[in-house]
Length: 355
Image (cartoon, rainbow, N blue to C red):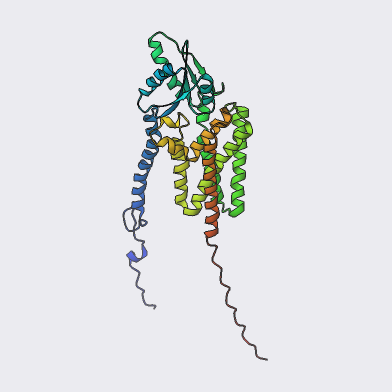
């Protein structure tokens, strides 16, 4: 008769129970959960602050405004404007023709022309409808209290299809998203060297042509040279896409986050497209013009409504971002080590056979 065998202990056969808080929990899961709970509200607060704070502190700060006419009368108008401490930067012009030319060339947002019949106001709603309304209120408000009217001429008006400039102001976010998608795709698809640069340039050119076809040809909200508008749109997408690709190549995943902050978050919030850079808090408007969305918006406004006046500076900023991003992409690709060579297997000796 076979000898009885001892049965294994029940505790050895059954697996140890696990719980969310016990030894079976993945290492660091609690810390990851806590990080998510803290980072999401912090990120929401950052986004809200970035967009809401400039809007809540909107006021004129050294806003360029022209004054023209006889010296004595023009001095009185200039003093009235300068009573608003730090609000206006007054430029003097000899006559109405010089003041109108300054408005058309984007040297000033508007001008007060003193004539024998009284003051007249020149504005450019295409430069900023918000500033045009602010100047109208500042100049005509005192005259209305004295039962006088001040003639207002919109020298460079917005097109009838976009009388408040809402479409132009909303165009930056799609451009930023298109650039971000282009740059991220070039990196995630593993494109390298000339192929990566060609892909970014080609996709940006197609995005510019498509955007111009929609905004100029279909919607009619851009009224300048269609090819120049397409070029500005393409350069804006390229600058943003190159920024994403270059930073991601050099820094890895953190590069995507830094590029998103510069081009999508701060770039859009500080661009001043919905109002004007001079209406944003001190330093914020200037910073926005050095970021791709702000520079792209200013360049697009210039070529769409002002025959390219004052577009040189923004185009230079966009070119610098594009060149810097593409250079970082090329240098990062060269420095990235290739895959380690696989060693060849040792030859297996063949046993000798007896003859």
